[in-house]
Length: 211
Ligand code: MD3
Ligand code: FE
Image 1 (cartoon, rainbow, N blue to C red):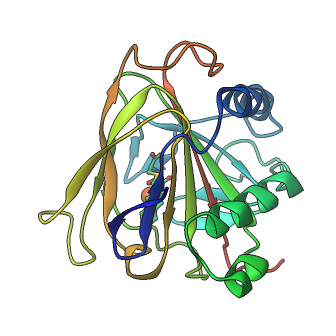
Image 2 (cartoon, protein in one colour):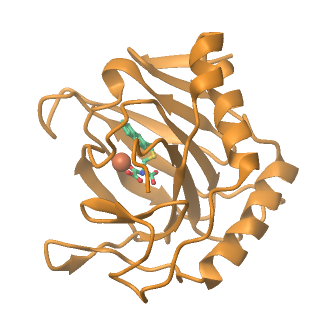
């Protein structure tokens, strides 16, 4: 069932069923309200087109903090146990060994919302001290996701359409690969997923940080 996109990068289509998707969208609506509201982070003086709300640790370019000093100074919501369990199940379902599954304890989630015009430029995720895999869940409109190489943001890369319910786990050599979202495909969200328009992506990560 998993498809290998590149060494260490594994896709499982339809990993979340519609009722799980809808349930997560309901949680998303709660998270966006606060204590730290969803916002566009500012990178090099420009607001991102993607809006982000965090659980566990708050990501602000280019560090993680417990309090959102760049938004309203509030502490972010705790990282829920059900997302730790989902992260472990994601690793198990993409061929990771039992020891790695048991040790995996994601402690931050970056929950991104894309409207039809939003993009994410090619980047590496290097703000985490841990090099444990990143678990990605997509809900709503499909997108074109670009998985690049570890050297630079240019070719070679492979483009893959991520659809509502899809899981991707990025570990091993893919953990430090450049990646981005080049397009969101409006009107492609499946009825029943909980989102009428736009795309949600959750990434579960281990920061490797302690308080
Ligand atoms: C490959 N998010 O939040 S998810 C991000 O769809 C981010 O919102 C995109 O890139 C999104 O940083 C892509 C897929 C993803 C996430 C993390 C990765 C791919 C990754 C980390 C390393 C390699
Ligand atoms: Fe990323």
